[in-house]
Length: 186
Image 1: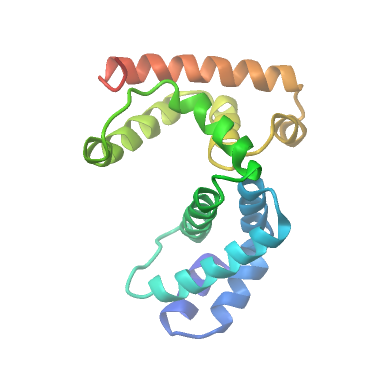
Image 2: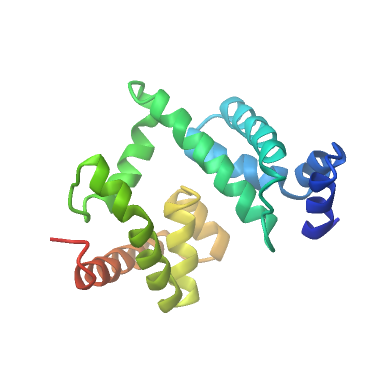
């Protein structure tokens, strides 16, 4: 079943919507959560929580043309919230290290300022992503959105791990220049 059909089921409050969405996107959503959480059990629980949230959000919200992006955003938020809850445990160390690769570029801000700039910063990163090569964009998104390891990315695209590292290093430099130009970096 296509995305439009699944959304129609959600809008009609038909429980088959969750089954159809799980068949179409369940494994990808589980992989996303597992990459962030490092545990199949935690990932499964996170995805199940996301199904409930999707059920509660559709309607009134309609996810648009690409249902996977809507569901992935929910799963990612659930997984990151779980990582925050586990922050005192060692299991979160890899994610903290991963986000520090990007966070080190940004100036620190109090919560109010950070919240105010979040949408503008997201728009700036999106503009930058649209301006780079497809290969660089895919590698960057796989690393920083899906939290895939360097080896996973290399295997996915049939390139060496050193090429992935190089692409990411260049991407971070380019992004830093763009963010500096737009006033996000000191």
